[in-house]
Image 1 (cartoon, rainbow, N blue to C red):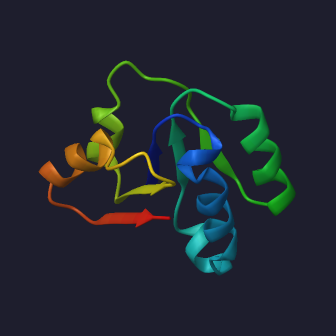
Image 2 (tube, rainbow, N blue to C red):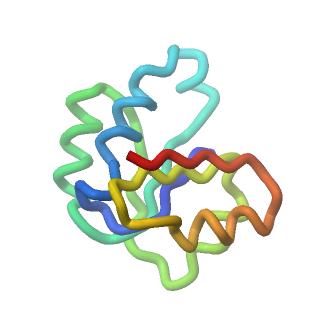
Length: 103
């Protein structure tokens, strides 16, 4: 499971995550799932995913996303200047794969 936790807005780089996922080969996409947890411009990003031909899940805002974070194989954060997210710090506590991109 690939996971992004955060507000769904342009500064969070959601479009970069969607485009990177779309660029994966079919085998990688078939063996994985991309999930977004957070509030924001969900419909906008669902339309982008649809136009890219990828299946992703938008679960909305969760009061405690830690359950999702602990299940994730990777937590993805692409941020345009909003610093290091709490979800990445929480994920690091579980010592699994951590992906970080700052643009």
